Image 1 (cartoon, rainbow, N blue to C red):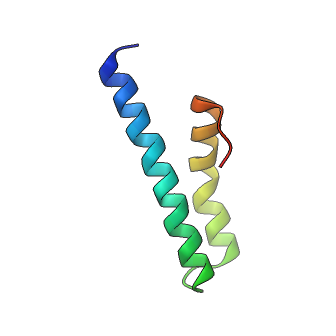
Image 2 (image 1 turned 180 degrees about the horizontal axis):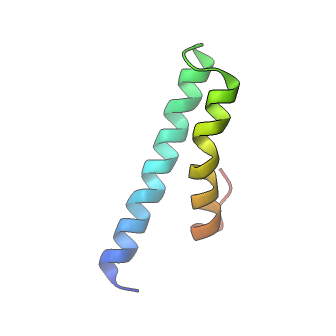
Length: 56
């Protein structure tokens, strides 16, 4: 795997984590429902778990 690919994957991981944090704040402030929250974070969590073995 090239350095560029690793850099892109790391950027995607960080973006997913930031998005999960933002969605969590939106849910806590009543902007989105629990169902919307779960729907939007599911793929982000799966990506992080599948590619990095991390659980968020």
